[in-house]
Every structure is written in structure tokens, then in C-alpha cells.
Length: 269
Image (cartoon, rainbow, N blue to C red):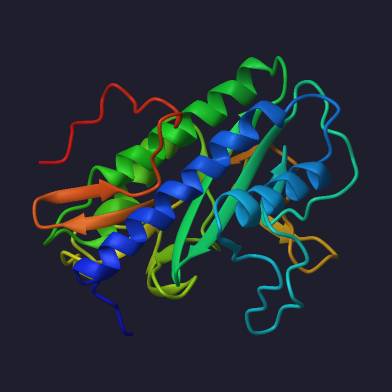
């Protein structure tokens, strides 16, 4: 395993890429409403990424080993879709929840973030799932500091989620990120404190828990990308790109219109 440590120049590049990623999600927010298709959101994202932000959509034609190239610029996972939902021509309807996952490349550096959007009025259960998944992500982020362990992050997320009656998807995880879309290490959203790799200043990772309202088991759809809950229960995910600093953490994918940070979060030193 080779974990890259970013130098000052790399960190500066990652800050720019992260901020632009957040600004793309800000831009898409008002368009996520009943009647819009996820294909329309994809086209809006691609145009904004290239024409306004001067960046590249990393998911477009991304082809890890064993996969056909991903055909779109963003991932849109609706309701019981867990992740990697491919945008299509089906309109979103009132009551849907949708995760929009975007990754940009700016000057060779990657920013990666996702948010849950609630389409019109949603059920109490759907809103609760979205809100608790957001809180779970921040529970993990708060464990980030030099000298801490990846297991500390996973344990914080798992204990919080399971304490709220939610299940943690285990087949997908966060990851290192930088000049490459996916770098070492893998960042599990479950685990035991004091285990796995130790965090060092200059590491950049994503924290992106996927929580299900029902059981944690998942299955792959026939398109080779989309993942859904086996029991068709609702699923939610949030993601930030996070820098390990000498005194704590810095969230790189924040912007002026990012969702409010939960009240329980203590600022990094």
C-alpha cells in the first residue's frame, strides 16, 4: 500500500479542486425538484464543470478494472439506490431522495463530494435517514487528526449509525484521493478503534458513509454500475474530501452554500 502525502503545492491544488466540487453541488441544488430527470442534472453538471469551472468530470468514461466505462459525468442514486446510479430520463417525483455524487479534476487534482437532496416534501423516515447519515459522516470527520487510526473513523460512524437503527454498507468505502481519483488507503465506515493505518499530516481522504434504513445487504443492477439495497429499503450517502492536518482536519469540499455543519461538531484545532 502506498499512501501519498501531499506537499504544500499539492494541498493548495486540492483546496481549489475541493471548493469547485462543492460549488458544483451548490449550482445543482435548485434544479433538483419534481419533474427534472437525472439526465438533465447530468447535462447541467457537465456544462457547468467545463464551461464555468474550467474543470473535467472525473467519472465520465472512468473505467476501473472489470468495469465498462462509466457513461455519465455524475452519479445519481435515487431512493433505494445505494451508489453509482447512472443518470437516466425518468423524472424525479415528489418524495424522492437522491444522492448526487460529483468528482472534478482541476489542474490535475481531484475533488470528490456528494450530497443528499430531498425532492419536494419527503417522508419523516426519509428525512431522518438523510439527516442521520449527514451526522454520521461528521462523526467520522471529527476523528481525523495526525496519529489517529482509520479504525477510529469507521468505529465512530458505525456506532452512531447502528445506535440509530440504521445499517452500514460494507462493500464500499472512502479512499485516498489526490492526483488520482482513487488512492490508498481504503477508508472503511465500520471498524474498531486503534486499528488499520495511522493518519499522517498531508494525507487526503474521502469519508462517505452509505447507510440503509433496512438491512445492509446490497446487490448490483444489470447495468454493471448501480448498487441497490437488497430489501429495497431507502439508502443515503454524504461525502466530503478531508485533509489531515498537524492539529486535526480540514474539510476541502465546503463552500458558501454547503449544508450547515451539525451543532455537535467541534472545530478542528
